[in-house]
Image 1: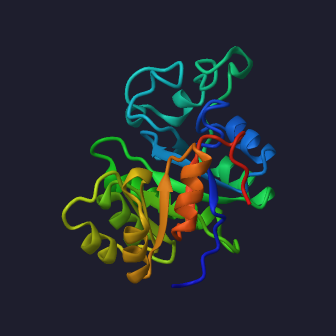
Image 2: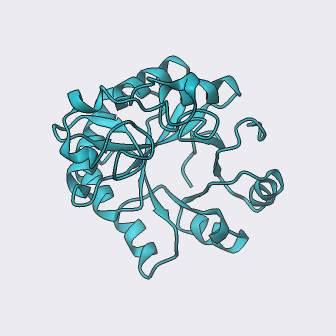
Image 3: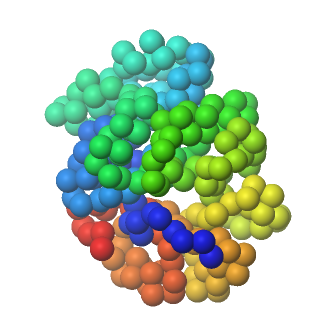
Length: 244
């Protein structure tokens, strides 16, 4: 397999349980716990701005309503993305991908960008996020790893910026996933941790793919998977699991 430039431990959505997920505040908190790699979710606004948000609607983690794909960045930028978590984070804004890129590069952190398109936005989101990532990390020693559960989004990213590394995300081992990963030129496969075992790790490595999992918050599970040859692990428990 090719050399793997990413740390083994990745903080999920920043420190997405201890602080509002997918915000700069969460990234700062994760970094304060020693994390040098992060995972985050990226969507597009109506006018094509790449920004961080997990859900297909705004209600759970912001003061907004409805689909973010139907709102301009000027509208989204006014929302409170922190007050839902706790009063101390009130008025924390949604961050643009450009801000996360600046944070990661200033602090020497690696990033796994999950392309998280709203329904019907798969190709547009994959293409734009890839173009933005290539521009924002131009000349960087370690480019961001682009991942998605949506093969359509990864195909668009592959066509737009073929040099950027890609990973297929899996919550089940659906029929044809290996062929899809091959067609996407994937460098890694990221599964729900419950799917991963030594046999699957060996199978992935046999294809030349790195094996990663989400979301492990138990130290004993993490150790078992690393002992089996796992290459990377995404966690919420940044205050309990210390990166090595």
